[in-house]
Length: 246
Image (cartoon, rainbow, N blue to C red; front, side, top):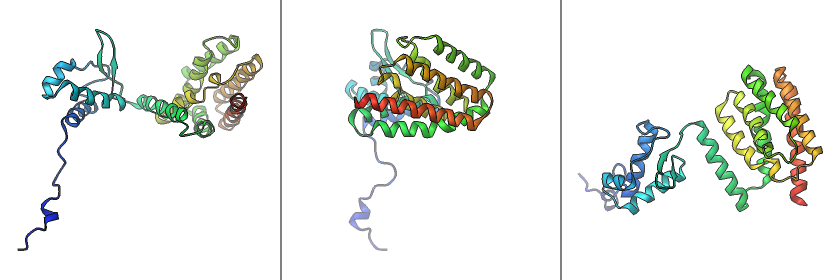
């Protein structure tokens, strides 16, 4: 029987041995994903975790920082704070996407126009699906939002939140949770009131367009809904770009 070559003799067999930090990270991550650690649950104090894993506080904190970056836990400051398990569901996707898009926009890795284009690609099917799947409760909430927008002044601090609620609720009404998460994330990056000196004229036109979108969803008219959302996003994109250029 021939002897194994030197390269065969040194090849890795099985899983590579993890470093202490990785072992801590993978163990806590597995407990979160399996449901052993539930959303909102506080992890034991760092001193206790370091003792359980038999690692230094420095090693433990490196593992916890990695879990924070993966949006699996969040660190609450203060004497009564600590490390808390985050919600691991479709809503976590929105949080991760929002942070990633914001960072890329800030660093110039992607352009605003690219994000606006993708938002339109997503919100068209969002409105079409909402026209088909919306519930009476969702219609009532959307109607309340539009009525509130009609009576709000352009300097009302609730305007950004009302706009966010309108678009994200339509996405939720689509029945597709992944789509809802992506729309929510991209909406924040392209929120028009972050870039515009909102004038009464723009405010009135935006509300008129929201009312047209709502009317199409109420009537379960997907084609009218698509036309209305494209008109709305094109209008906002044009004004946002003009403001940024000026």
